Length: 184
Image (cartoon, rainbow, N blue to C red; front, side):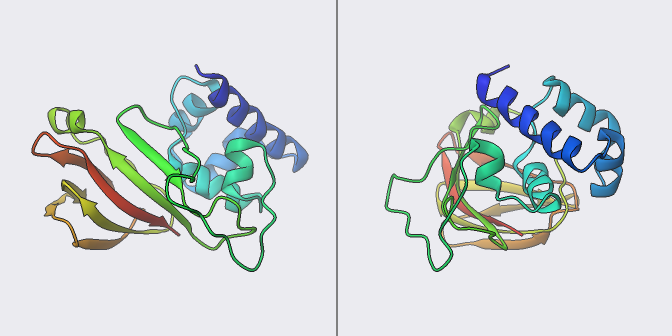
């Protein structure tokens, strides 16, 4: 388990302890599978980005604060220059860069996401998280499955969906796929 993962787990536990809420109660309240939540808190499995978004919202902290331990401060606007967004490492086959990391109390979490070319050889990794999501493909080809419906996205295509539905994506054609994902 990486040091970053250990720190995220510790911050989640502290937030729970402050509000005197058990792991079981939090999992139930947010609609997470109890066994999977226990794997997240034990470090057996990484928290998904969607789960972290929901946990941050539940405790009224910014996602960037939950992930990095640093407090966001900007309230009017947050300008993120090219190649300056901090990476939020969650799963090895995907890169996530938080595009509004320093804006205080966001209503949505915008990310630049990169699915590596290697994802094409792997089965779809399906997950769910409360809320909604918007994905806009910038480059490459992306296979996306939402609620069992598979679609292929090309640059300029976008999809908006209920992220409570089982969903997953992978790059196609042996090349990486880059897209903007907004999790709400």
